Structures are given as C-alpha cells and as structure tokens.
Image (cartoon, rainbow, N blue to C red; front, side, top):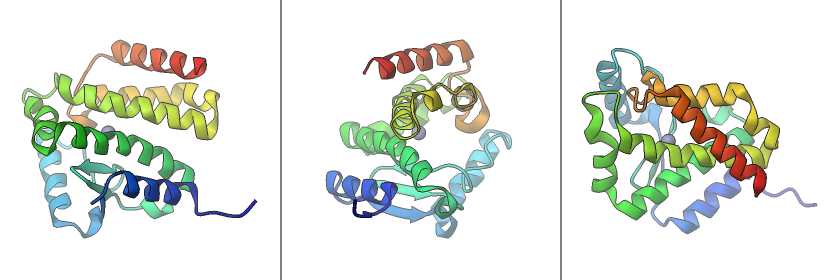
Length: 182
Ligand SMILES: [Zn+2]
C-alpha cells in the first residue's frame, strides 16, 4: 500500500474540488477573527472565550482554523472537516445572507436560537458519522462525546442555542441508531 497524503489533507483536497473558491484562514493572523472573538466574549459574558483556540469556523466559502490546529491528529482534523463541510454546503445551499441570518438573527434573546441549532445539528450528526467511520461505532457511542455535544447546544459556546439537554440527547440517540443500521 502506498502512503498517500494524510486523511485530512486528502479530504481538504476533495473539498476544494467540490467547492471551488474554498479558502483557508488562520484565525491567529486574522483581524476579523479577533473582532468576532471579542464580540462573542461580550455577548456570552465570557462564556465563549475559546473561539480563537478551539473552534473551527466556516463563513461562506472560508474555513477559519484556530490556534493549535496543526498539533491535532490527522484523524481529529478529518472529523472536524467533515463537520465544517456540512456548513460549507449549507452556505452554498442557502447563500451567505440567508445562512448568516438564520444563524445570527435569533441571537437575542440568547437561548432559543432554533435556526442556529438546526444548522449545527446537521453538522454534529456528521461529526457522529465521521467518528464512527474513523474510530468505530463504540467511539460514536461514547457518553463523554455525547456530553460534549450536548454542552455545545445547551452551554455558552453558541450562545445557549438550544438549552434542552434531553432533546439534544434524543437527537444523538436517533443519529446513532441510524448510523448503526447503515
Ligand atoms: Zn458547526
């Protein structure tokens, strides 16, 4: 077997072919990302303070990578790219303005942003599928992973976008059932 490019690089190449104009930006060197970081800290009262260091962000056809992205394993980067690919396709499907509106407008009051929650859920379902493909079904069933996913929806990371942990867990359970049947 020949050693091809790492799984994440091969996938990024496939995404570039699927989505012409795809751009990759390092958040660390990006003034816009630092502005977003400051705004998020303010509107979440410091609850989301990892925007530059933990979260990959997709806007339009641009992927913004956080500090430490290079230090993650190729498998971890691949699973994250699968999630972000869903957002890239959402932007292509709905357009920049509509996607941004659905994502951002229900920002106030923080806490019941159903549009954002649905866009994120579509992407986190893909996180579960990619995790099962790369690490096996047991990894996708890991309660620690589920707790992390639930926290993304009910916690400050995305502005408490859908603060109903049992609803999120039921979405996860359904996704796992579908994955294990496929
Ligand atoms: Zn996402």
